[in-house]
Length: 124
Image (cartoon, rainbow, N blue to C red; front, side, top):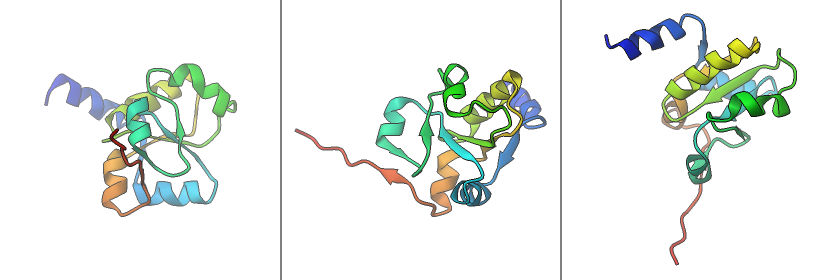
């Protein structure tokens, strides 16, 4: 295993990864905030309906505006589940107690056939 893979393995011991079907149920029931931590251009191209966008580069600074309560249930997602795992660990360090990472990111979400908004590009 590479050093990075070992690091991710250690994170998975402290950060809960949630399956996309369970995440969809929690969000639909209003039991968790769904936060897309991908870059702005990724968000603009496609995202999960109802998700809030907070880029990973700014999430620690901006999270308090959308989740002032440290006990707010939060589900983070990215493309494949790695960036969200890293961001979830940082939010735990800040003091958030109910933060999870979407296992497999939006790739697993799409593979499960769950709703995903894609913007069509218009060429001029």
